[in-house]
Amino acid sequence: AHAEPTAVTGHVVDADGRPVANAEIGTFWSFEGGGQNVWNSFKTDATGAYAGEVDFRGRPVALLAYDAERTRSGLVVLNEDTIGDAALIRIEPSVRLHGTITSTALGAAPDWSNVYIMTVPDRVRIASSGGRNATFDLTLPPGAYTMWAYGTDLQDHTADVTLTRERPDHDLGALDLPITILAQHYGKEPPKWSVADARGVKPDVQLADYKGKWVLLEYWGFW
Image 1 (cartoon, rainbow, N blue to C red):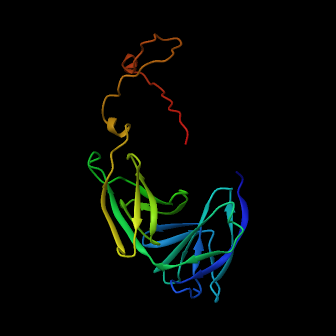
Image 2 (tube, rainbow, N blue to C red; image 1 turned 45 degrees about the vertical axis):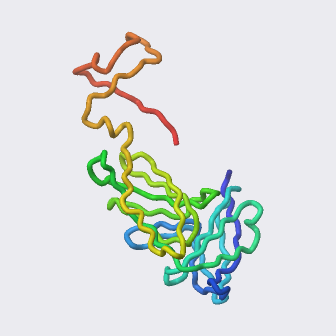
Image 3 (cartoon, rainbow, N blue to C red; image 1 turned 135 degrees about the vertical axis):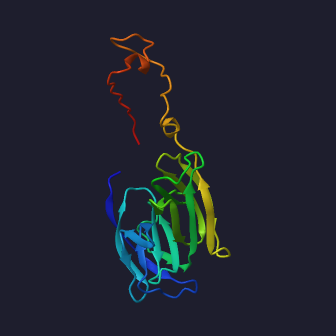
């Protein structure tokens, strides 16, 4: 669906219901290099009220808020039925979620990796952390999430994660991800292929038949 700029309003309060001024709200946060980047950002006024716009496509959209000190956070998910309502975001001490990406099969850390955090059950992407150091480190409101980890030459890994107030530091340790089928064949003789159709060549043709010649292979796919 086409994205339509849609107004969102509401208040941010703390655990005791008191307004939180200068809280920043966004639809997506990126945790990189110890800092945070935010998309569709707007802030609360002295009364804790906020007003902004989000790109709404008819699917659920999340508002993730952090206080000015970046120590407390809160989340609300809006859908077609609630996008026009004033939304209350209650913030509380954030939980740190962190770990590393590794691969025994790869024999080294990946050149690049990333972790997405999605809401449950709507699977709205709200945050990411990654880069070239094979680590991820985020702070999030307590709650249930789905984590999607992936990287260069690695197979995707998804897992459900529940963050609680009782465990303010949630260390996942090293996530050992298997490598992709393609990466398993690096430096090796390509596997034999099975020809579905052939034109101008024999139906059982193999790459080895073209030894000493240039062969153009086109791999086609889609997201």
